[in-house]
Length: 335
Image 1: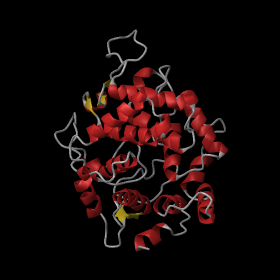
Image 2 (image 1 turned 30 degrees about the vertical axis):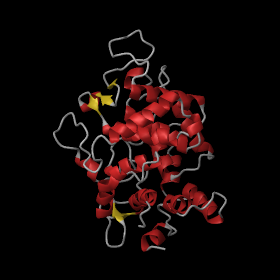
Image 3 (image 1 turned 45 degrees about the horizontal axis):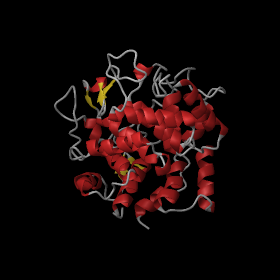
Image 4 (image 1 turned 135 degrees about the vertical axis):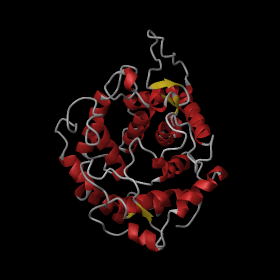
């Protein structure tokens, strides 16, 4: 066993989820394994998850009722996304209540996820993040979630989606998500790769038997878009700059709408492309950030902005190391 693997398997009261994911995802232990059972219990008893759940209103929301996008990053949207990334137990009634609250209050009449329950506030990073989180938290098969994923897929492909001016159409583009292929008003109406990564993470989690034709088409289109440039360069369309955002090259945890190159690799690996030769330079970049003890540093964080910090920026990070080792495993590279 490598030193890095042993480090991730430590009994860490501050980050028990790392041990749980390491056992199940890196070592392939089943859910019934006694160590996995104990690790799952620890996630709910120690570290960030109980701190987040302690701040939850009995009605299921965080901070204030409603769609839950604001205030960042402690409201319902961000708390549920963070819980999923930390490995919270889907069977816990409080976790279930948070997901139910979102599905009841953060969905527009079109069926899409929404920052304020209006169709115009759908955006791909929000839809993808919530779709992935709710699938991880056990809501797969819920008709509200599946409808939201279907609408998300159609926004990607443009299938039966009218242009922004068609105000009487049942589903149309708006100023935010303004056209097919991830066109986004926040990116000067150019395709947004941050949104594409989040969409791919959600669609990759949908079991094959549940994928509709629109979901399959959107998944293929998303993969094509992410491979339209060398992912290691992150040279995707940038509407307000002639250079990629520096955030692409800072690996961190948790991940909200900001995305890094490591998450491009994660999403493509989850979709079955971990061994694709077009990711060669991306894996070189990832390996180049590894320290002499085979650990990765926290380069980007939301320290002090969420209900509970996972780790400190600028120090070796178990969460970032776990993320890197997940994709290296998909590539068949020993970490």
